[in-house]
Length: 155
Ligand code: MG
Image 1: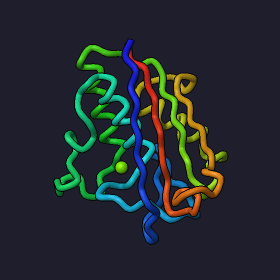
Image 2: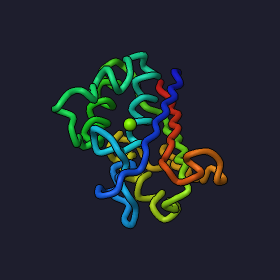
Image 3: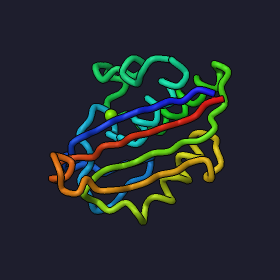
Image 4: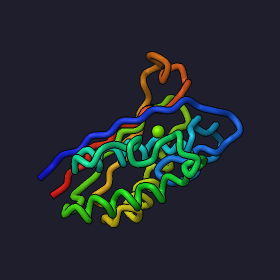
């Protein structure tokens, strides 16, 4: 068994869609990034790579590489899940916490769960997404961006 942990954060940027876990969340600014800014998938990719000791998202998909400008993070996740399996591991479960003051994620949690399950080849019952606020503390609490923590287990 190997545990993995990943973290990501992005600030909001007006004029682009918010994509979390591969799901477009209506009514919110997007996240500033070289790619599509999907902080949920970025944290999950780092957790997967970390558990398998295969480096990190920046070494696999450099933000200086024009191929990844506006990249669809879902495609990157599918690639990394394949690499982790090719290294001999099975993904047991995924547990993710998303922290932001807005938007409220409750109504989107199930859609994100099902989409991440599809992208990683897991049952939805093996994927957990929890949304919470930062109780108005710090920059995340002031609504400047989103933080994501992801834990996974490989066998
Ligand atoms: Mg990121």
